[in-house]
Amino acid sequence: MIHIVSGNAVINDPIIAANTDVVLGHVSAILIDPHLSRVAAFTLKPTSRETLVLPWMGIKRIEPGQVFAWAANMIVRADELFDIRRLLREGTLKPATRFHSADGKLLGQMHDFFFDRHSGAVLKYEIVGGPFAESETGRNVIPALGNTRIDKEAGTAHLPLKFAALARLVEKDA
Image 1 (cartoon, rainbow, N blue to C red):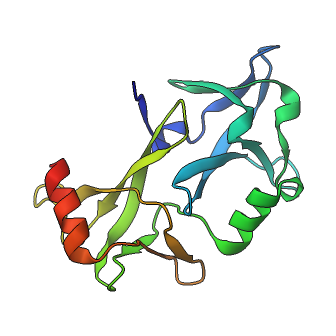
Image 2 (image 1 turned 60 degrees about the vertical axis):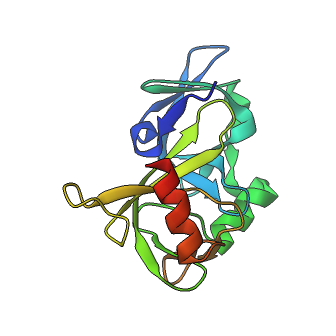
């Protein structure tokens, strides 16, 4: 059974060591691996010059209002993990990222994303504006797809499907 969590809902949640109940920090951002469409790590609010992360493998469970790490030693410097260094260098999906289809059509701007709290699989992105936006809210969701290409400098993500194929997927989910 899939248990869906909003990425925005986890921001500012405390990260607690499950073995000691000590608060290790608070979630400041979530790093998404766009190639795998998975949560890679939670970054902690800075307490020093170093970026500290809780990688997905260090998460024991996620509950409403709190994230549990297996232990305090699961928190590491971001530069200690190759995949995290790569994501920080190449770019990750984050709020305000503009999504484009493979044929260049602007789909909207990311407002939130939803992931499975057990596997870390990103399931869908909530976008603002664009051709799929509902008239009442100005928002809609698009499916999360692996092999998404990031242009870090431009703040854009290019999904691997053309607009017509994405429209069929969005229509099917509605």
